[in-house]
Image (cartoon, rainbow, N blue to C red; front, side, top):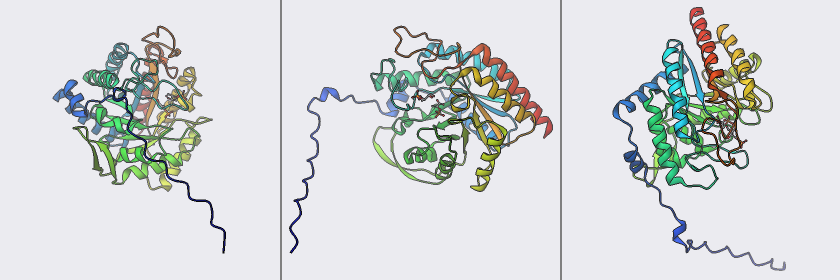
Length: 362
Ligand SMILES: O=C[C@H](O)[C@H](O)COP(=O)(O)O
Ligand SMILES: C=C(OP(=O)(O)O)C(=O)O
């Protein structure tokens, strides 16, 4: 008879609840936060129209070009609203050719560690103060939406989406989360077009799989309006699309766009692509964004109808600063380096001309 093996290890007992209840910080429900920072009816109606317009651009029912532009992250809401006012004026002027959407990103995904954005760490010191962040963040989003601009937002933490989603007209699932099932399921539920970014590695197949997954209905957990964890049934998002952001090498060139078109066609998906001029496409050097935009403008002028949109990281001043600096400037990015406004405005004119030229060819 075989020797009996070692006794199975006992399962560790469940951890007791933390004794120090002062370490627990209850948050408002999405309904309570929305009541404190409501969207006026007229703004909510404008957001519904913006979502339809962005979807129409992506489906080519509207011939204009989508331009998602703005800071890498918002760390100073007053300065970011100053930027939004500049952009709103440009958006109005160029509205025959461009649908301009403000990057209003309040959550930052990190490769390893770093500041996670205003919503979760409003004080820049890395100390999470979610209650303050949610209040400051939603107040900013309602003010930014009041400029009349559609807002773009990357949903990093699915649990926080119900607090802000009603303000958003275009969403991103980022390069670091596009493989994640909770993010794909969230996208299937979000009531706006969602761009799926290629992975940091440069692979686009994960984003294409994300587009397919989010098109389906799913059952997912979500925080309800009154703050309870509930089961939600999504219907599937018909307006998801690919965002090329480069990887170790760029993927905005004609060959990469053609490769993306083929991959989308092979998956039975519409060949509609947004290209991010920053991140892997600029090697994170903001000075390279104008070169990327000029190349994309030429491709659009030459009649490429698969190019539905362009993303630019832009802010009031050129460059970036260390987020841990003692007195951060309000006008300078604390995450990726951005193009300053004076170098961004001419790029918007270039893209408007390219969009008009493409329209003339059609
Ligand atoms: O868009 C911003 C950054 O590229 C993203 O948050 C990742 O930043 P990190 O690689 O510095 O963490
Ligand atoms: C983090 C971002 O992009 P990516 O996911 O492409 O790195 C971003 O756009 O802020």
